[in-house]
Length: 538
Image (cartoon, rainbow, N blue to C red):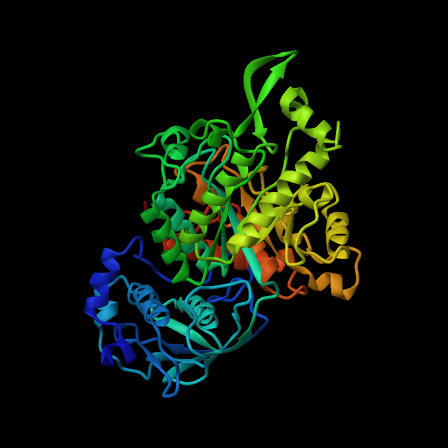
């Protein structure tokens, strides 16, 4: 019991660190550019530091609870993670175990003011206050466990290595909270399968950047790697390989738990009625049969919205998904639906004629989407949809979240969506699969999400955004360096105040943060010519 109250970094933690994935770390020294060492990314709302530094007692650093603090497994696991980071900051054994000859910063006292919540949510409170002002113990206070996690990340970034090799921290006071509640990364695991360890690696990257949503675009036309116990043929026939390229129930649970411990939501996306080719391989009769003239041509289009078996399938599948994924939200997709196959199919046209919608395929799409929305709501899901659902006139629930992705005046789309009273997410300017030479992160960093015409109330309906990395050209070999540190630019845009927008000022800080991620085992690609003191070692 005492160990849970007072977590002491010891030789046992060294062994723990060596057993955990990629925790051989060092801390950054002053690097290229005009920036202070130990800068925090994303930049906090208020961050005041002085030139006074305190040496850190790496050998005996302690995480403790304040006397009246609440306690839980989420904090205890964070003690272990960040303890490993600190104990590994001094790789030289002589440095690690030399006698203490000067007063040192010996610990971080954590004061969690409310009981722990089990899972992160859209409404979680991530605010915190962090103070390093003496030679003894730094203090971290937060109303929720999620604020404690964000504050511990900031504390870990404040530590840096002096010219003498000593780990130090500046006298610092931080009061911080995020600007937007939803700060997401979309990873596509259908077009290329992403191994579970690669997903976990990027969840670590999200935690280091205070990203709080993993939008898991788990299936699409190309493959269906999600293993359903209700419909096992979906992955058996729809995955690239039903043995090696799948996500079992255990895999999903591992990802969700790994993310939970880091305060990150996992929101699955099952996109229909388009983007569903792989579903049809394992579910006969689900997709629309395409015709040339009066005969089937062997091709299949979107899900058939005119048969009752479609909705039974959706209800059963989403009920199972709800039992596996713990978040209140599901992403239902609804984008890029081609009408050509529906137009060619005589049975669908006869159904439309009998329902007084001859030739109106947008209305047919509305029929399908409305049914799926109703099913999702009945199961207990809140939902996110791509913008076409609203653009095509579907009536959705008042609490629907609409994601704006079409990069053709997304400001106009945000104005439209919020004028209708819906909450919105912005993704359009942050499609990271669009590759260009040079420092393209600056473009992502410079886009101001609130720059759309609307009232103050409309601006409040923008709840955040996502950096999206679609999977056409990334797999486990290159997804991580393709994502980081480009996604870090989006992370600061969504966390920090609107006034934090100077690209030139951000450049040396991001370079420092990129080196920090490399030291923590994230192979983030370089920003520009330069170096890190501790270069990437695979």
